Length: 360
Image (cartoon, rainbow, N blue to C red):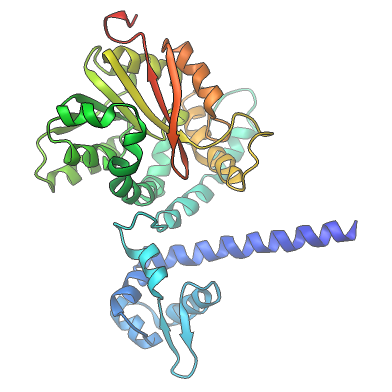
C-alpha cells in the first residue's frame, strides 16, 4: 500500500543521494581537490582553492557546495571558507592509510561504465559474453582496487593475516619459493618480499598493464628476491613453488578449476595454497549481512562478467562461500581444504594435499 511505497521511495532517494555523493567526490579525487585541501592544513576560500589547484572557480564553487552537503568538507559561512577535516583527509588522501577509502572513488564510476556491456550480455541468452577485464583497467577499476587494497595489505598482511595460516610465517622466514597468483600491481608480492628476504617471490598475472605497473613499482625498491611475469595461471611450472598465495582472484577467473589444478601441480610435496577470497556465504538465503548486496552488485558489474567475457565459468563473488570453494578445490584434486581465519572482508583458506610428485 501507500506506506510501503513511501518507505521504498525514501530508501531509494537515500541511494540516489549516496550515488551522487560518490560521483561528486570522484571529481574531487580525480582533479586532486582533496589533496589541495589536505595540504592547506586549514580553511581556504573558493579563490584560494582555484589558484592552488589551477581550477575554474565556477566549478570549485559548485563542487564545494556538494561536498559540504555530503559532509566531505566543512564550511565557515562567516568567512566563506572551506576545510577538509582531519578524518576525511586521512581516509581520502593518505595512500598509506590501511583504512583508506579513496579507491572506491575510481571503482564505483568504473562499475557504472560497465552497465551498458553487462546489460547487452544479459540480453544475449544464446551466447556467453561479458565485459572484459581490459575495459575495467581502462576505466580505472584496477588502479582503484590497488589503492583500496594495498594499504591494508602493507599494514596487516604480515602482522595480522599471515599468522592465521598454520606454519606460513616460519616457512617464509626460513626461505621458500612463493608464487603470487593474480598479483595485479604487485602490492602483496612486494609486501611479502620486503618482510621475508630469505624467500623468493614471483608475481603472476594475465593483465599486461598490471604487470608493467608492478615492475615499475619494484624498480623503486632495492628488492632482489622478486620477479613479475605476465602469463596464464595454467602455465605455472610444475613443482616450482613451496607456497602459492592469492588475494581475491579465484572467483574472477575464466577457469577456476583449471587454475587450481595448475596451482596444485606447481606446488612441491607438502606445499600449500594460502588463499584469500570474499567473506560471503554459499547461497542467497545465508547472505544476510548488509554487505552482501555490495558483493552481488560488484560481482554482476565486474567479477562475474570478466569471467563470462572469456566464455568462462562466471563464479563471481556473490555466493563464493566456503562450501562452493571446497567443491571446486576437491574437483581440482586438492585433498585438504580448511578455512583458517578471516579479516573484515575476506575468508582465509588453506588448500593442501596431492601436490608435488603426486600431483597428476
